[in-house]
Image 1 (cartoon, protein in one colour):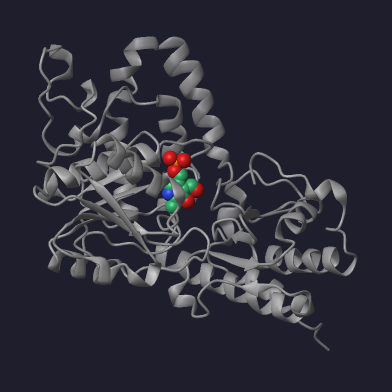
Image 2: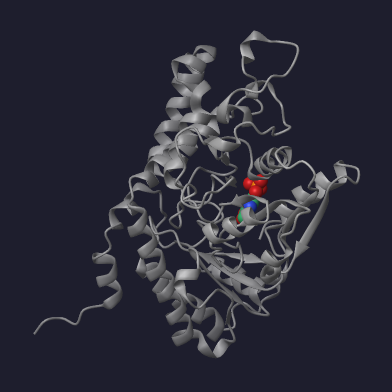
Amino acid sequence: MNAPVDPIALLDAEDPLRHFRDQFTIRDGLIYLDGNSLGMLPKRTVARMSETITQEWGEGLITSWLGADWVNSPRRIGDKIGRLIGAQPGEVIAGESTSINIFKALTAALSLQEGRHVLLSETTNFPTDNYMMQGLARFSGGTLSTREVAPEDVLGALDDTVAVLLLTQVHYKTARIRDMREVTRKAHEAGVLVVWDLSHSAGAIEVDLTDANADFAVGCGYKFLNGGPGAPAYLYAAKRHHGAHPVLSGWFGHARPFDFEGQFEAANGIDRFQCGTPPVLGMNALEEGVDLILEADMAALRKKSVALSELFVTLVAERCGEFGFEFICPANSAERGSQVAFAHPNAYEMMQALKAREVIGDFRAPNVMRFGLTPLYTSFADIAEAVERLRTICVEREWDRPEYRERAAVT
Ligand SMILES: Cc1ncc(COP(=O)(O)O)c(C=O)c1O
């Protein structure tokens, strides 16, 4: 008689991406479901960092700007990220934070939209996106204004006063995927340019900026790209918009930075979206993460992400159904990015209790438990075990301890 087959073990055994897990530093027993906040450390990054610090910096010193190609890292890595998001070579530049890139993209789009003064977004967008719009409006001294509407009202709010629409493709809490092509088409019909925040899309779902006829996009390097804490972000500008002016006119965006001219003259192409000296240590770490994900087939990655999230949702319903978790993501997996999220009145304490049991997800105020699914290193066994530990903390009421109620600075 054959031994009964464990269906979860079978899913892992048949996973075409399973060999990627060995490429990451993963502590035994840890179930890491937070790669949508900070991706895990690729083993190859350790070697690259050591080389960057010891040889390139330590020995090469200033000559490494040319000798180790530091100077071209924003374009070189930008082009690699571009391959993940359907951009053409020369349309993506890596560097700075997502927030700063939002500023650059917004101001570049505004420079192409004379006569229009409204920056539009949805109220539930990731806060930094809307904060950047609000800051710009304040700085404009009344020339610009923001319009923040409910998610379902965005398309209805497009009119001839709107200069730019800023949207996140995969929502940071609900994981809802926006139809980038359709939204862009409707925006263009209204004469509006769109800035897409791809922080939860790149490396998680298939993205095709060219097919979507996108204008501008930005995104994080430290989430699904596994670029490391505070990794440089990236900015995409469609070639047809390379005449735009991103306002942050630093010397690295100059046509001839080493001529040290008195007046700013923007570089041709995507280089004009650079500002200051690239953060080389972060750049080189980011490149390793990007190279690794480029080795994976995005269609296989997406397929596994969907399977992981379906398993998570099914098991939570089966094993934790009586504990009052409300699934807040779209029920249809085709409309959901690479995470699952549940609302619960004790979400904060529960996440603390889960962390004590070595299951790491995160809490998003006011009441959401969020679990990122990173197909390169998350296994089906991780999901099954995470749900069992969730059940244990509920059955034993482990979350109901005073120490789990204290709010930390980072959640
Ligand atoms: C959608 C989105 N945009 C932007 C950011 C963060 O931007 P920054 O890297 O500038 O802090 C996040 C962080 O989680 C995010 O989820």
